[in-house]
Length: 112
Image 1 (spheres, rainbow, N blue to C red):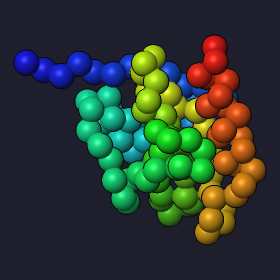
Image 2 (cartoon, one colour; image 1 turned 90 degrees about the vertical axis):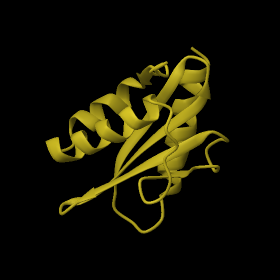
Image 3 (tube, rainbow, N blue to C red; image 1 turned 90 degrees about the horizontal axis):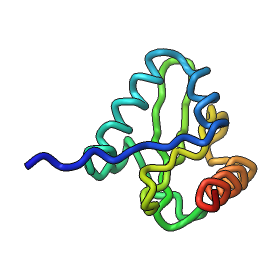
Image 4 (cartoon, helix red, strand yellow; image 1 turned 180 degrees about the horizontal axis):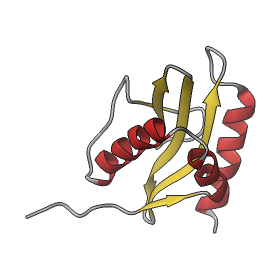
């Protein structure tokens, strides 16, 4: 029997940011999210845990010749996969401001 496909719920601002990425990056993100929907567990280099945000939070890691992109998602919600933040990464480490934005948006989505 086929496994159930999990639904994906985007924070409005994360959706807008992803829409601004190149088609190639959007396709890569979409492919990784589809694997998550199928119940597959992603590991480096595609994804890594973001425990500084919350247990159950992860980041998708995508890059092209123009830059490095991150998409934060959460797997422990009964609602589905929550995609709560996306940004273009410009430094070696994830800026604290992006982590804070991620925490705020995840809290918003969990408390709707």
